[in-house]
Image 1 (cartoon, one colour):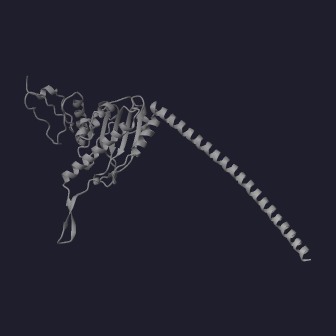
Image 2 (cartoon, rainbow, N blue to C red; image 1 turned 180 degrees about the vertical axis):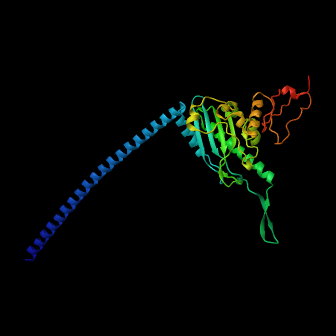
Image 3 (cartoon, rainbow, N blue to C red; image 1 turned 90 degrees about the vertical axis):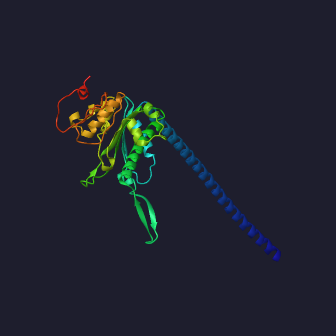
Length: 334
């Protein structure tokens, strides 16, 4: 009986193990099918992702080539977008205001740039600090007012020169032939308490003229004078100058080509210029014909005879109209 009973148990166990094997085999088959299905699905997803990525790359490159072609062709919107991105990528020290506007005119390849300049508080009022041992405190050493004004004027000049340099430097295709730059500062007028945005620097230069400058060796304010820029005679007091060209995107794109002096056709008539603006304009006219010219300190003196036998015309715009007198009449008789 024990022999037959052992045989029966063996057969039962064998049947059970075979059933377990079939179940395990079925589970493995199902798992393998799921794995193959998942693998195929992932391959399809990967292939679709690759195709989408390739499509996105093609579209990006096509758009890039279209923008490049539009930029090279002088399309105003494309050039303005590119120059704006270049200025946005420019990093300034902490405390400097940011902001700019760009307009481009394809007919003569000129760009009109308007930038925000830092306020006068960018120059620290303290030149340094000293430690007072007896009081165990730090005492500020005030910076002289004259030095603050000179430093501020230099900072403004450097910002203007840097912006023009960045415009020409980023334009490797040489689409931009000339730049008109207006530098404004947004601040509060100490006299009225109102927010103002006077133009403190305005200049016009072309690529050839600017390329001759060695910016690492120039004195900023002297360089602006060399470029015949109009600079506020007292930027620390926010005394404005009239921009060579007022920023108006739509009008600027349609304006005819003009140089610094020819900008008069977009300004008010001469009688509407302030005395300072009129003096700067006359200085530009003389410098444009190769003569030496400069702006003198403001005074109420109406003029004096020139020394020696040369000609030294002194030009002012007075409050009251005066007689028309030839320049030759100001000198000694021949």
